Length: 314
Image (cartoon, rainbow, N blue to C red):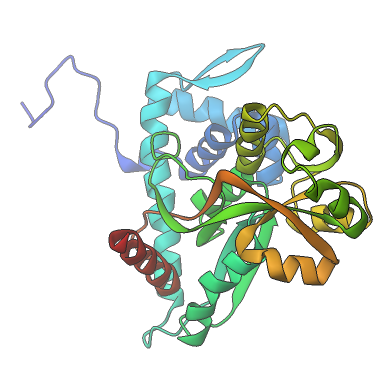
């Protein structure tokens, strides 16, 4: 008998029996959750994606997805294949990145994703040491929703994500989260509204016009918990995920806004706002999120190492 194989056992699969193009299509479908989204990302017709999946299942001899009216979910075999495919394509991207550095290890562009809710001063203070040390040839910043940014990070289209919520590795495999800093929250408003709200703060916020963070932000949950504890129910006139847009709304008198205390002076000066009061006990924390990979951009390594040192000192 050959090692690991006896008559009657299924014939062992050889590498040339795996079509890696089929595997790529499967990986994208599994990651995006649907044939429709996968076809959009791959820029091919939906029937093409479906055909590739069927051929892969036939070649592997297993069912990879449970299909229902609710969508597609990975079978146990599909989860196993996805883990291996995910590792394969991650290593492939790492190889390309490592080779692109060249023999002299030249600095390459640093691709950063930032959540709209993160104050720009946090992004600036995080990136300045990288720029000063010339660890990147350039810095390319993109703003988006956190879930989309993490998807881009896992696809290796981003090197690092800066956000206002930690990402659990139990939810996102291979993620590494580092704390960048913490700030209190200050209530600010346009001059007319601020003068009224300062009297009797924080009870004065009850019924007052409020430009609120959107519900998908970590800050919204914390602020609403504080308001509930203080029996405060403001009147939401607008919601904004982007901090700058919220500040603009506050400037034109649409309502009071929540400002990270570390940016208070700068925000009040730029948008002609005034401080109303501090939300005692409310803090928000900012994080850098990276993923494990064979080659890590030196700027990411520096940022994460600095964050580790700060956390160790606390």
